[in-house]
Length: 88
Image (cartoon, rainbow, N blue to C red; front, top):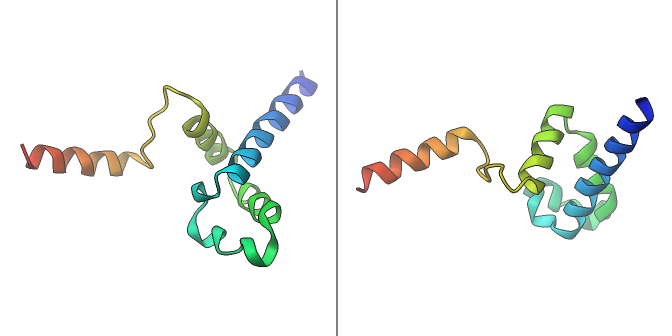
């Protein structure tokens, strides 16, 4: 059971890492600015290492789960709904 979880975690982190390497604009701009000085791989590693487990799982779902909402957060969705109802 532990080995299965290790393999899942490795695959999950590898997918996040590769996705950020291929799509650097998904990183916050403060991390993108560090590419030149520290290198792409180091910056992506540092970004992932700074994630909580819950945030990393949520980010994975946002990036790879086709049924997950794309909105950055529920507040952004709420603001959009208020604005759209205002203009009707």
